[in-house]
Length: 134
Image (cartoon, rainbow, N blue to C red; front, side, top):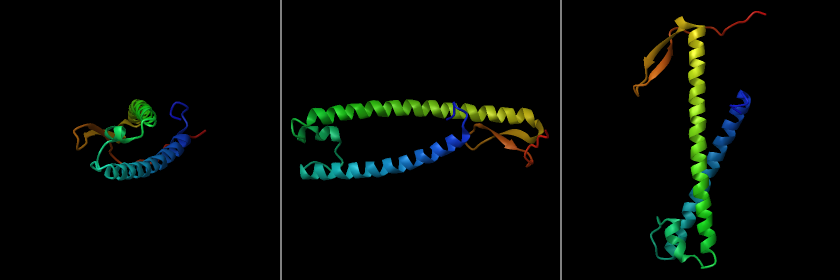
């Protein structure tokens, strides 16, 4: 949606992503609960990892669980890479927007530093929205 320059689509997808994150948190909680139950049933610590539990699965299931874990790890790395790319794209978009606004209304903005020590853009005075006559 960013590449398509569709701000409504970005907002819609943002809401959908947040809903998916909530769903993933619930799924993770359920998985951790199932792992803890399985661990305790096999006399292992409840905080054991799934990989450490692999020898306790039936022999014909182990390769499937191992393959599933490998594929999940690949997907996690791919999602992290795409997330970093999207974050960089969004940061560049905000930077370009700020530069554009500074050029359009240079007296309305000043550069300051935020609490993290990074430069930030501050509005000097509230301004009304731009009005274009046509």
